[in-house]
Image 1 (cartoon, each protein chain N blue to C red):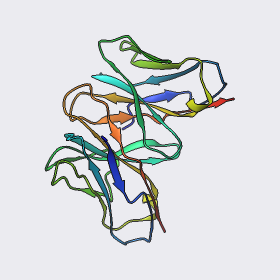
Image 2: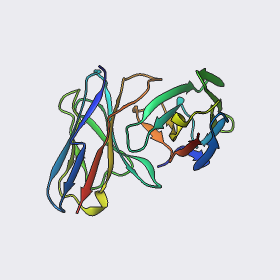
Image 3: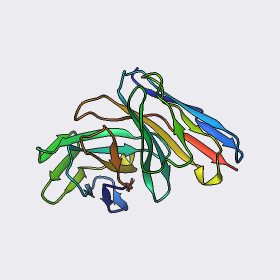
Image 4: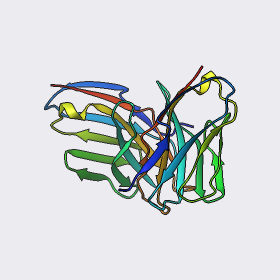
Length: 111
Length: 113
């Protein structure tokens, strides 16, 4: 069953602009993770935010988590053409070790 | 180098011909999973394993089998492939315990004619 749902499904911006992607989920989580996938390749982990954290930064990435609304957002600042990829959120329910992925947001950054 | 490897990377086969996609990780991870990725459907989990000899069904297990005889290996078996199993498959692993990231293999693109 799909736990996380990303929004929007697709996003097209110009280089230098900020990109914001949202993720909503249904049940309580242990942590939420964001991954990036370049076309047809394996997913790469970007950032993990624990359920007791509200905000986390990593370079140009900023992730927020609102457990009361069961939602998270990923902000990429000063985007670059190389940021073009699909971005997925994944929820870790804390049991049995499996992550549940959403359908992803396809980001296109035009030079 | 820490990695998850899959073989083959590309495979074209015919309906009913048994095949195995191998997956191996060198990080001593307890958890391993198989996903399939289809356009518009995102990543769907097929099977996962919490440790050696412990496996369980994910969201779409029909038509697949797995085994976990060794910690590092987690092969995916299609006993009688059908065209609806044409997809991009990913193996992944992660360490046990909370708050660990998952590492993905490079993917296997399977076409069943």
